Length: 53
Image (cartoon, rainbow, N blue to C red; front, side, top):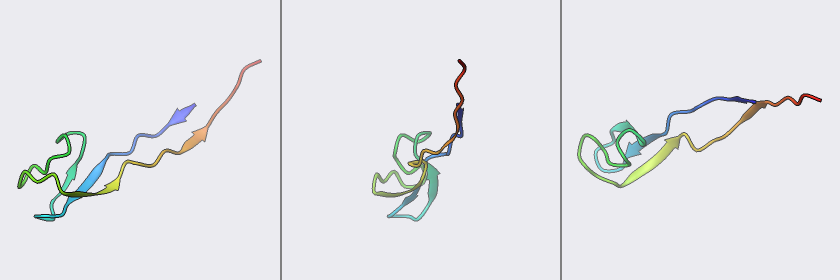
């Protein structure tokens, strides 16, 4: 199985800063707001899977 990790990115709705959601525990590092729009990192794509007999 091949898994590609995508960074969880958010846009602060108060100060418009872009930040890493997981790294900052959902809090904007610029202004401290928790009011955000999630831009990436929610998707999951399975690229390849193989089975051995």
